[in-house]
Image (cartoon, rainbow, N blue to C red; front, side, top):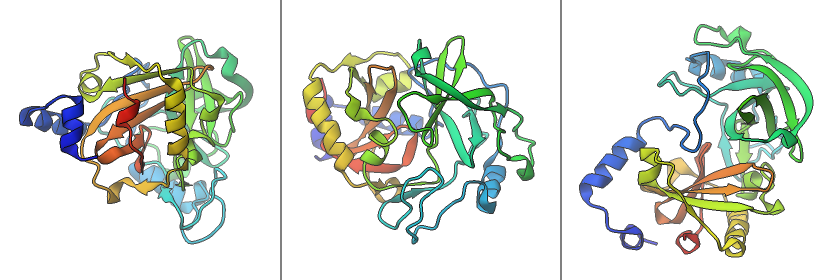
Length: 290
C-alpha cells in the first residue's frame, strides 16, 4: 500500500506535521506505555559492551555458519543477524541489563501484578556496570541494574527472564546476538503468542510521541490472531535495507498472563517490534485497525 493511500485512510496530515514527526523520531525512543523507575546507573557502554562481546562474552556466531547463537536460535545466512547490544549514553532513559550464561538480557516490558510469572531464581546481578566500567569487568552476574533475576514461567529462559519489584515484574529479553529468519522466531519462540491474545490496542504515532496514553481497543481478535499468524510466517528483512518511511502507529498485543508485545506499524505495510529495530516484516496491516 502506498503512502498516499495510508494517509487517506488514517486522515490527511500536512507537511509541517510530517516534518515534526520526522524530527521526533530521531530522538532516542522512550517507553510510552509505562512510567519507568529511574535507573541508578548512567551508561556509556558502546565500546565496553562491544569489546566484551567480540572477545567471546556472548559466543557471537558467524553469519555463514550453521551453528547456534548463544540464545539457541539458528545462526545461518538465511535471516537477519542482530549484533550484540550497544548501549549509548544519549539521554536519561537508559536500558537496564544484566549478563547471564554469556547472554545479555535487556529491559523490555513491565507487568503489573505479574507475580504468577515469577519462577525459580537463577542468579543475581551486581548492578556494578556504569559509564566508567572497563571491558574486563563485563562478567557473568554483572549488569547496569542489580538484583535477583528469575525464570519467567511458561517461557524459555534463553529468551526471557525477570526481576521483581514492588511496582511489578520487569521482563528482560535476550534480544541481541541472534539471527531472526521469520516473525515466528520472536512472536512465537520468544513470546508464545499462539497461546492467545487477551487484549489488543492501537495507538497513533502522534499520541505515542505526545505520551498521551490514548489508545483504541481492537475487538476483532479472531481476525487479529489470523494476521499475527501471517506475521509469524513472514520472512525477516533488514530494516536498514528497506524503505519503510514514517511510523503510523503502535499495536499492543497483551496475553492473558500480562506479557505484552509492542509492534510498530510502518509505511509500505512494514511491521517492526519495538525492541528489535534492526528487523522488519512486510504484512498488510491497515485491515486490522479499529
